[in-house]
Length: 196
Length: 145
Image (cartoon, rainbow over the protein chains, first blue to last red):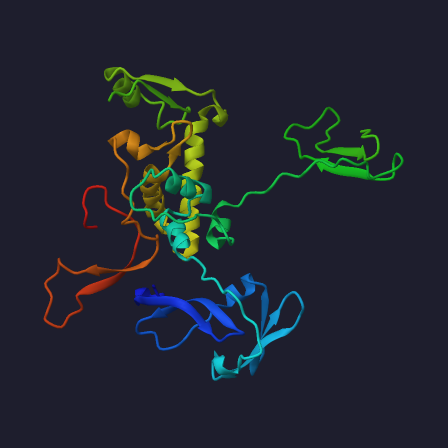
């Protein structure tokens, strides 16, 4: 397991914590880690909303809007007390797979389809065999590769009679003036019958 | 492996006397696309776009200065050669060239903070042994880079 600043800790075990009515799955026990961390994104992925206030926070079930549990803020950290979670239900919190994102970046932000193909056809050595698919937008990819999508053609006529809507545009200045010395042309198109 | 044909546009860097005589000497046919028709030169123009897109992406990921673009393009080229799958033939470019599957287990993210072991300058006992740097690419010739 890797932390910011390139430090790493050993994962000693995996399991489930909680009691009979509430449990959190896929918990990793990491050597040398002093605090227990919960992933907010995994709460959100599994159908819960998390609201943070100035002094406390609440985790809400998205479907029936019931409060799953609450917690308080101690200085800059929002804390959770597991012993109080008796009558509350939390199930299956999956861990997000960070590895594929590292490889996406290592392969210089290559297309997800390409990475998945490389892994499936075993065309390279050293690429871990995991499921490569995009579960979020990559900001850097958007900055570097985004293109405009084409406008879809309309299949309805939005006006009901001629001269209801006119499309007007001016072109020019043309380098060579016309015989009468004009340099601009005005184009007017009627929306209904496309008369120019 | 000999080059038989070169296809390019009419850029001054391709259409000149030394290049033509070089082609003639090595028996290379030099083909040109029609003037002002980059569409005819599609293969290289598309690769051009890939390189530029990936490099731009990498630079913006860590907000690097833009003058690292050359490094970004070089390392993109390095990675592309190892991961690009030729359609239909379903093999990486590297495999065609070298005849074996490329090993990519040593790849790193571009722009990462890295520490460079100081083995060039003479160090006093308690001088720092490493210097901080930004990872910009691999070396084609050496395992230590």
